[in-house]
Length: 120
Image 1 (spheres, rainbow, N blue to C red):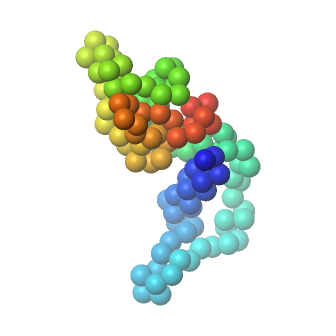
Image 2 (image 1 turned 60 degrees about the vertical axis):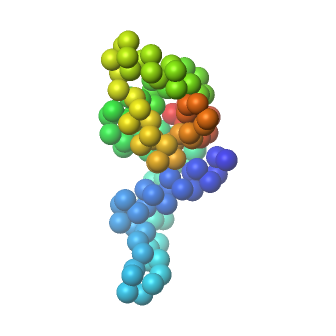
């Protein structure tokens, strides 16, 4: 599970930086190989994911940090208590983190998509 996560985050990062793009007119992907090779992309998945999390909005990265304090997963009932009694707003941020691939939605909550995400 770690390598697909690393690859998907790397491809998203390349796209966000304009180094990988799809040409509708040519109907194919294009990239700048020289610029991609010159990038300082960490070989370590944990470091790369930490950098990816740092680039998220503060509310999403804060929600991930909160989740990490509870272990690898969190039950919806705990999220409800945190939102109701502590005043944290987590649901939208956790949804966004799941959309970005950092979390997986499970039956009654969320879990980190990889243990390296939790560590990051």
